[in-house]
Image (cartoon, rainbow, N blue to C red):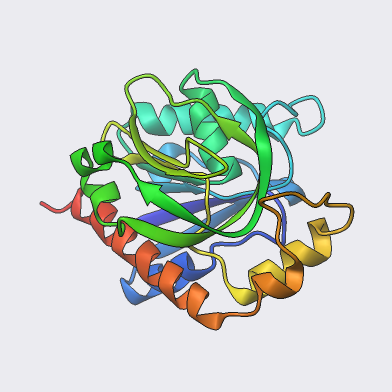
Length: 233
């Protein structure tokens, strides 16, 4: 399969998804919005993976490529592609599907548990995740659930942490792909000026337990395997 990734900033990458794709012999291509790469034709990929970034879905005046990216997401959904959005990527999918993206009551930065909903059982993809997992978070905005989507997970700080739309369009507000190097880069690029809060951890704490990364990578692999199975003949 051909997997195409949309990268918004140089310090948020595919992380463990790249290792998974390599192990499955899938082809990976990239559009790097931050250096002006064009959006691809939807005929060139089977999956669209939309990564995170510090900008908002509403920042089209500042980041002109956002409108083109939203059209690519809409076209990919309409064409029946697998579409996976992480953090900002999930917010962009929600926005394209007509849901509101807004400031969250609490910023959520660090490791906090997410819990699956009962409704998640209706989705093969969400059902692949454990009932509860300590995931990595770095967001100050959230999304309303798109009409027709399955509500997949929540956390104490954020009600809408995951959704699935039309079986193969997945939005994850949290990160399962992040590596220690990825967290270090986030801290370096976005860590200054973060206000303390009930769901904001210190950088040292975020990097203190390597086992956390192993667990989320295993969960991400199960989710990707479930997505892959949807396209089995």
